[in-house]
Length: 224
Picture 1 (tube, rainbow, N blue to C red):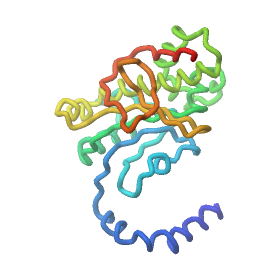
Picture 2 (cartoon, rainbow, N blue to C red):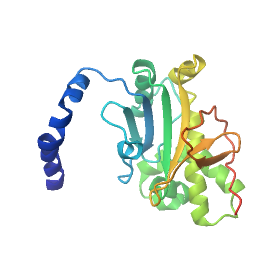
Picture 3 (cartoon, rainbow, N blue to C red):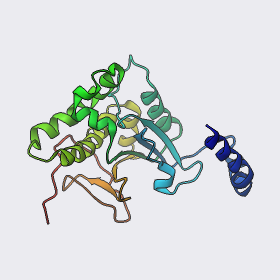
């Protein structure tokens, strides 16, 4: 905790004064460009990854960047965050970002490993669609490759799930919201974006494809 307190002190003394006018402009309003949904993993720092500043991103995090399908009779932080970002803040982009070595997806790949964690087990069952796609279409792949495919497939499935949210569907119909899927490799710093046509996550080349995803099995890259 002392490390965090020291960090707050450095922020107040060294960082805040340099950007005081910007923080003052944000004190009573926000206008973020995008809603970024990613994993709770401590190794993911969205603002560092995207080189964004205060007010640029509306960030929501949970284990495995999972988005439950919309249910009118169910309130949850995930559903409420999406509705607020899209309907009130009017974000232009909704980004789902998965990452390498995801512990949540390891739990999806090996369900027995989370049996003694009933709440985690129940939460991860919402990624069953992604697990089933990888299991039935890529069972020949190595465990490392299966995990990578599962992490990426989960991004695709969650992009499909978020479309069931009325606020998202309405904004997309107006042409005011674009969906994007990213995969971040922690060890290399590489970031790839999901491209619908080849059905792959491809290196970013100055832009991220806007997609209208359909659930499908991600294609493995052919060995060079």
